[in-house]
Image (cartoon, rainbow, N blue to C red; front, top):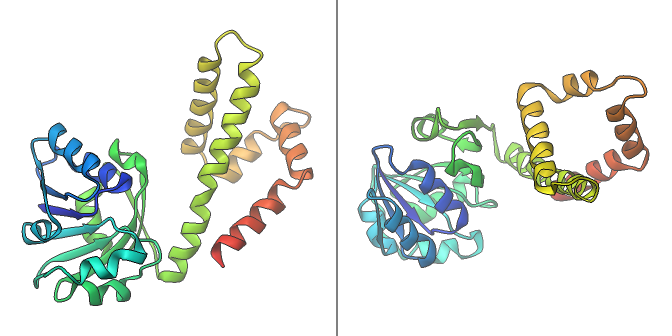
Length: 241
């Protein structure tokens, strides 16, 4: 496919890295030149152009812009019928950016994560998920959402990633002060958490680790009594609103 990227920040660059070498023709915006030039140097199937050049050369166009500046940028560009436009912009729903890219079709909103560069990453998506599955699966998994309200809830809930990383990181720091190889300790904890959650649902994993008086049960109960679950629910509610 001929894939274009208007805006080439960190997330868009990760998407490009995940798609490069898979038979597509990829053209990226000269915006964020440090990313676009590095991609063009790294991959033979990636080239760089101005925003209009990206639009002219592409059948599917990804928008890696900030929502507050997107309208002004996109209204300066000329799209054509038959093009599919996919937005990475949180806060800009399908019907909103549809006017900015007409007569092209506003096909979908998707929220990728940096891990899409290596594959095995979840992709939140609203709209034409069939198109996105053709492009991103089976290397990644597209999670189809029903409407903007559901997208808002997913966006709030995905923010658990940072505090989860903080929790593991702090445990690794604690462990690192007590063992001979701190790097190995962190690698152990990261692998333990990621593989355990990948292999089992949360409720099943908690039950499996609920041995009375066991380390896992004791630490979980201690943190719950300290208000962990209440603080999480309050934080998610604030993000959603």
